[in-house]
Image 1 (cartoon, rainbow, N blue to C red):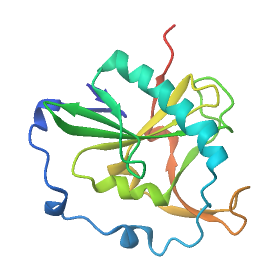
Image 2 (tube, helix red, strand yellow):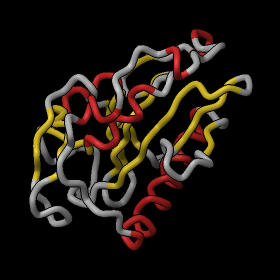
Image 3 (cartoon, rainbow, N blue to C red):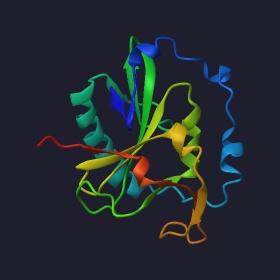
Length: 180
């Protein structure tokens, strides 16, 4: 199965490692003190999170029907189960500044640094950004995202700037979420 430009052989993950056994950095170490965060906005969450998850789940169901929404509201959005175990995770975001089509309009994509916690869950994890109409997505492995440079970006939600990982889009796999 291909996920985020990487071919993932699910047979390689029959026994997922215990998260305590992984030699990972803590979230505070990864974020480097992170600074300012965008405050949670329930209206934005309701308008974007559910529709984006539904669009991606519909696409994933065509690829492998055992993807589920994570029951943990603070965890990674979607989980792939194989033989009763979680083997892949996918975090989904909707990008309104990507108006439409398969071509992302910027040379880099900013992944919120606060999401780096998903890089060390003990199974492969990916980040997907969908365009505004949720017809296409960019997929990136968190293992790669965690090794990219961070930048502080001012935006309409955080005036002082929030820390993002700055990832060149050439590393992303573009996927069509809708069947033609």
